[in-house]
Amino acid sequence: MKKKGYQSIELESKLERRDFLKIGGGSLLGAGLLLGRPPLFGQETAKAEPPAKPKTNIDEAMAVPRTKYSLPGLFPGKVVAVKDEQAMNEQRVDGKVVANMFARGMESLTGRPFSKSFKLFFDKKDVVGIKVNPVGAGLIATRLEVVDAVIAWLRIGGIPAKNIVIWDRFDYMLADAGFTAARYPGITIQGLQTMDEAAAEGKSDDDSRWLDKDGRHVSEKNFDLDAYYFADIEAPQDKPYLNQHVFNGRYSYFGKLLTKKLTKIINVPVFKNTGNGISMATKNLGYGAVCNTSRLHKPLFFDVCTEVLAFPAVRDKLVLNITDGLRAQYDGGPGPLAQATYFLNTLFFASDPIALDMTCHNLLLQKRKEMNVKVNEHPKYSEYLRYAQRLGLGIADPAKINFLQG
Image (cartoon, rainbow, N blue to C red; front, side, top):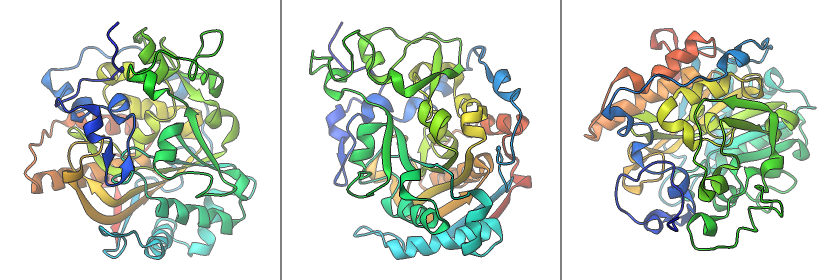
């Protein structure tokens, strides 16, 4: 086998991976391996009509009774945008301004004073997972200051630091983006899995960092074999794929963090595109809560972002979504592209990730047109959101979305 790292999709350009690892002072080690470039959901799939959808176990998810907090949450179809031009510039992020934006957003979303908003979503015994997006560290990753505001709110509400987890799928990406124990003392920082970057890049023949003595991925124990998203799509069987994805069969298992530990989830994605679609609230969890995902991209398109969210491990625990649009990206996503970023200085709030993503999809579409980006407005790039509405997971019809801007 030729020694090169496994890539889930073909790169649009011939840039070497190291050409876009260091951007804006932050590290994005592994981004080329994990995310590829714009073709991911947009240009690549637009070339032809997709084949018949592979069989999945979505019916099993839909058969599970819902709870008070199940999607679309406490405020179906409601989306709040809070903008403040003083929040961020090239030099700094103003944490006080961001905290004020957070408070305003929660008041507008809930219709209650900020001091009383906490009790709508949590009690003091909850274990809360904050799902961040660390891709594009130093440029377009979830801002630490936004997470600071969320944590302060949780702590004031009475949740101890030990019951707060900042998490993502990959452990090293969290550290690259500044989510460290030193930065957040007493709070758990947890990746669902590890990946040996050197082995993935073909730079090392020593697999001991990711394989145990029995030849199994060391992160297998982090996934719940009783909770899975099944899709009738076989995965590649090569070692680089296994290194990156932990399992390589037809099952994408949920992390035990979601199924066994967390009682509530706050989703904090960033405002960016992925080809002609977006990579925001639903994708942050659709491809972040389970393993073995690269096999799903082409055959299931964006539907993974809907169907994974239908399972109880996400559907019944995801109570709040805050899209970080302080610095946004209108092209080149889901990986970072510095020349396509801009200061939007806006936070978006919703309990309903479907309404949130439809709203942001349309806003990003407007921005792409303003920047003279060639735009494909085929409805398939947002059909997964209408699919989610049919499943009762949220509101996708713009006419039924209550979008408040302040």
